Image (cartoon, rainbow, N blue to C red):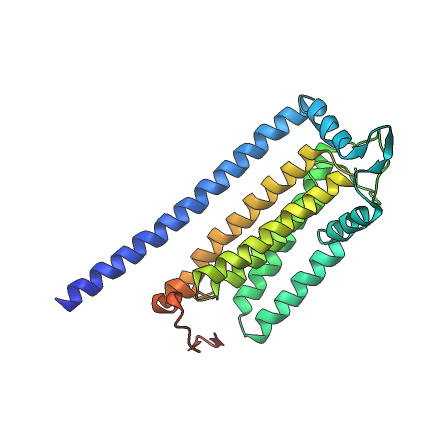
Length: 260
């Protein structure tokens, strides 16, 4: 009887894991479809009026060179936008890769580097393909030298922070800890995108496209991580590997050369 119950429990967990993979796939499809629809509207010029209205709403009436808010708000926006820059993203990724290397999780380290590096490459390719000009009717609050669509800062922030957050969440035993980490990464991604519009260096639809493309890539990488974890190449999700620890009973373990 106990063997039957154990087998039923295992089958239930497997079904839940497959449902999780299916949900991730649905998110990817929805994000890619939304990106394609938005791109079509942008190329047709249908979003230009809305883009201009949002940018103007973030400027003082009668003075396009002055964003709304005090100078301190403008400086905060520059600080936030730097979080999506190449230097910061590269630094954070290398620091995280070093963390996984110290844990002897070579699979997770390589996965992180490939995921973030691939996302950055896709962002650069997208800019070359669409070659959309930056907003030219107001001063830019930050130095820019590439095309506008999609927003590289927004996309790189989504790719790097969501991928990193998902990897960290996998080794956390409690679901509320996972939710906390993921909520922080999502908040950072959103703030970076908003700062790009506030500083006048991107059309709002550039940022939306960056979020969609970055999220699609990051979630696709999460789906790959689930597959790799089953083959032992990436650390398994703590709640799937040790369900009892998901209720707060974490303990130190040693599996396949890495410890939790």
